[in-house]
Each structure stands twice: as C-alpha cells, then as structure tokens.
Image 1 (cartoon, rainbow, N blue to C red):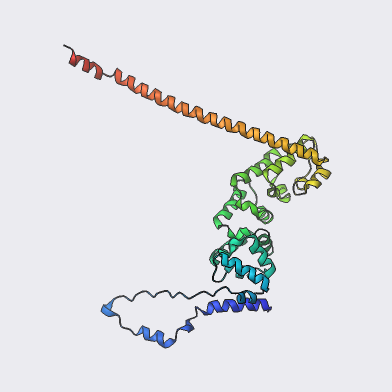
Image 2 (tube, rainbow, N blue to C red):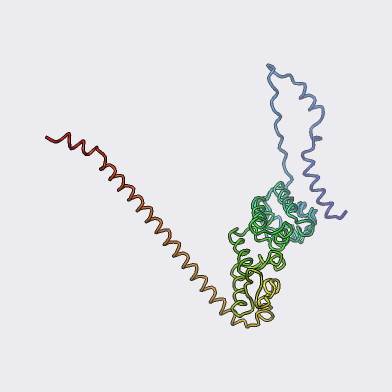
Length: 338
C-alpha cells in the first residue's frame, strides 16, 4: 500500500474512532441500565451523542499526499469556504483514483465542491454510474467538468430524459453525449432541443451522426454559421423527404468538431475574411428575424386583448338589452301612471 493511501486510511480511522463505543466503559453502561424507572414511566429516548469531527489540518493534508504548497492552497480555500472540518470531496476523489495534482486541478475549477456533503457526493457519483459513466469515463468527465458533482440529481436526470424522450437518442448515445459534452447539463432545455431540431430537420442529420460529430459542443450560433456558409456556397444541401440530395454533403464530423482554420481550408474552401463577413451578415439577419417575431407576437397579444374587451362590451350591452326587453320597466311605468 502506498504512503498516500496509508495517510488517507489513518485520517479516516481517526474520524471513525471518535464515534467508537470503546470510549464509554462497559461498567458505566451497565450501571445506567440498572436505574429504576420512576412512576413506571416510559424510558426517555436515548439522546444522540454528537462527536466532534476531525479538523482539516495541514498535517492531515500532508498525510493524504499533498505537498506543502498544495496543502496550503487547499487549506486556505477551505478556510474561506468555512470548512473547519474534513472535506468529503478529498476522500471521494481519492477513492476514484485521483492523485493530489489532479485533485487540486478539480478543486481549482470548481471550488464549490469544498462544501458538498459526503452523502450528496456518493449519491451523485452513483447516479452518474447508472447513466453509463463507468470507471475511466467518470474520471475523465470529472477532470474536464468537475461542476457535474455540484449539480442536483434531478437536474442531471432531466437532461438525460430530454435527450432520450424528445430527441430520441438511445441510452448509449445519451451516455456518449454526457461524456463528450457534460456542460449541456447546465444549459436551457429549449436551447438543447433547438440544436437537435436544427440538425435533424434543417440539415437532415440522424442521431448517430450527431453523436459522432459531438454536435452539442457547438453553440447554436456557430452551428448555424458553419452550415449556412456551406449552404450559400453550394456545398451543402438539405435532403428531401427520401433523404436524397443533388450534391454529396460533407459529413457532420468533418466540419463541426474541427478548428475554424480546418473548416475553411478543407471543407468550405474559402478565406477567413469571407467567413467573417458572412458571420456578421448572418447575425444581422437573425437579429432582424427576432425583431419581426417580437413585433408579430406583440401585435397578436394586442389583438387578443382588444378582442377580450370587445367581447366584454358586447356581453354588457346584451345584458342591458335583455333587461330592457323584460316586463320590469313596463310594470314600473304602469305603476306611476296617473
């Protein structure tokens, strides 16, 4: 067993030993049992004894394998987060196979993990395993996007359910998407669904091709820009109902997950200046389209309100006419006639 593992075990044993029943002698426990119950009353429920948790110290961090400099960094951040006692994330990351260097990088990317409870960490890690992120993939995802351990289980499962039910991805495809693009767990569901619908209906791509191309790594704006640029240059065509095109479209994985330079030189066969001009024109077109939609929506809402008011007026007028048509007014006139 390595010295780092021994240090973690010693630190864990000290925290467990504080709750050990050996701290209370057997004779004292037996004496407490012999106390007679007064007035035959029910025995009071045993009070939970709260034992102090082991404090997070420089020595404890050194025993876990951190260097003096690393221990100082972890200790100072934990102090700012008001973590006076042990930090569960350290033990959890160590169990997953992280070394002190990788643990420090994870905590630097997401300092909020300092205050996550141990029970929450274990439940979230177990849930990620249920979603298919097993050993190896789980470590890579946490290293790349440690914020995944700070997200509630409901939020993670909601995105997984959206991909399966509304976007019709298979279980394995959802696992691949979460492994390659874990940041989508914090994105708006409407935006995710729009990206899928744009690639499926507008570009004619299937789910398997989207997963291979790592579709969700790109923003909506970048996806529209690259696709629109190829389309206006005659290099991409939306398939018809039978999935056929007059030209051979480039594969999604060849022009989406590549650098902008590769996209321009090998796929679009264009210059950076032309692409920049097109990007500005497309942004202006999209902005004008959003403005028209906003105006159309506002006018529709205004017409609905006017319709409601006119409806109310018609109903009131009708009620007044109904009252006039009744014999009530006639009876009043007859009563006051001389």
